Image (cartoon, rainbow, N blue to C red; front, side, top):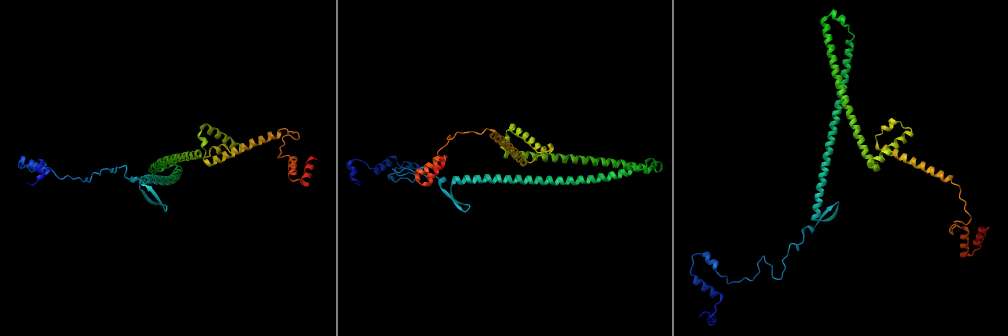
Length: 321
């Protein structure tokens, strides 16, 4: 027998059991079935690649070092600065926002500059056109003035054809002069509207700068009271009412307000001085409100007690006498 120990004990080992089971089932044409029923006698006790050894705690995501904590060193203004990836990302985003804001600001400034240039160009062309209209109006007015010197009655009797021609020219030139005057009036009205708008924009800008430098005037009641007081102050100082009403520079308003407040302070100080001067002199009895620090006699005694010199004794006698 190949395996005496197995015979004697009557027990089958794992290989013998597999052979016996295969003989009982018989041969099979299904290779797959044979593979499925094959018993693997080799037990692999090695841990798999994706399994951790017993007793070792698998590394979790929490134990792995965070990538955001890794420092990235960059150079800023010649100095090395270490930032985390999160801080670097925030700085990059802030830089993009700032760049976008700067770009939009520059674009707005360019658009505003372009619009101002176009406005200035249109204003110059309009002024040139207005000058041409003035010249045409002067020429037409001179020609019409000459035609009005014609003796229309005599011309009609002497030359009816020339009379009709001159009359037609006169009427045509009057119509042209009327059109020119209408265009001159339209341009004048447009220029007046632009000047008014420009003045209004200037006043609004000056008002904003005034409030920025004088926040107390945000209070409408206080602002109104001080404005009225300032108008009265300037009028009392010799300014004409029209000059006061035409002030359009916030720096002038601030300077005038400082002058007004200073004069008011000086008036109050003068009044307080007069009150103090008008008070009767206060008579105090000797020895009242005297303190050791200010009493010459006490000071002399103290010096004498410390030094014992003849000079200090003479000072005490002089203070007594």
